[in-house]
Image 1: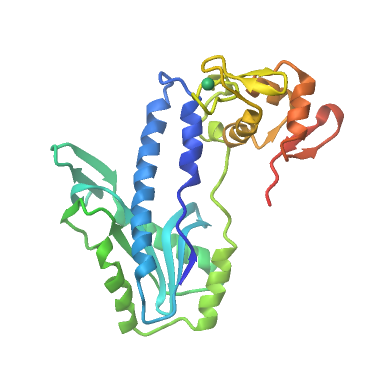
Image 2: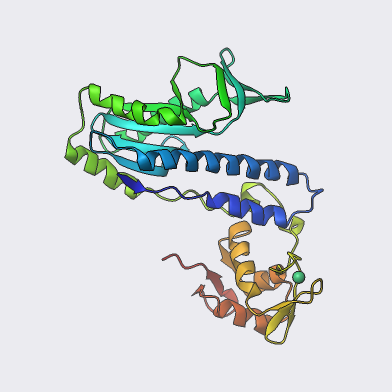
Length: 315
Ligand SMILES: [Zn+2]
């Protein structure tokens, strides 16, 4: 039974907003663009696995969660977690194509693509074992001690594992049903009440951090392209004219273009915004205009007179 369905990573959308506002010459531009590609590939793999999990019919009660974000000794995010009567099962998804080889001492995953290009990745088996440990620590806080299983799932039909590892279970996406079904051959350790209790705890888990991205990447505010973005041609720097925004590049107008710019500000710059910060980011030179925009953007007003600031409302 799916409790928390698949949803694409919101983080990618935020990274796209960030690269949009960096010059291609910026020292972090290519790294962030690369991250976006990797997360998109990861999302695609997770979606493929979700299609498999939606179909699976297991001979026991189960609760399936996509993206479980937890804080134990460190913060970590599980791609899928399944609560079963036989313990918890972590499914860590990898969408890496080509010939793959797990190596030890040092542990890493080596990829060889069709064109002969080689790449190295941190060992996903180590990552999965670390997640198992962290999850056990997390549950320990609730005085819960249950078996924790896990498998690395290779989601792409274009992955070929030439050399596997004994450190964890490694399977292809189409093996998920039989992998999960096999648990019914071992003794169950969780009662229905135990399963409900863990489900309740996981449903209360917080969302991943939404730290403004310029803090996360240590990018100075001045490095960002400032202004309101034109939805039609993507130009950043629309001009405020009476009752609307005008794009000097494509000549289109949009009365609501500032809403998106303010949401981008929260995503990239800071969790709060003052009148001055609004004028700086939207390239406005009129204090009253900024006040009008901030008051009409569905934000929460805090503080008084010159100390007024606004923040997003979370429902
Ligand atoms: Zn335009």
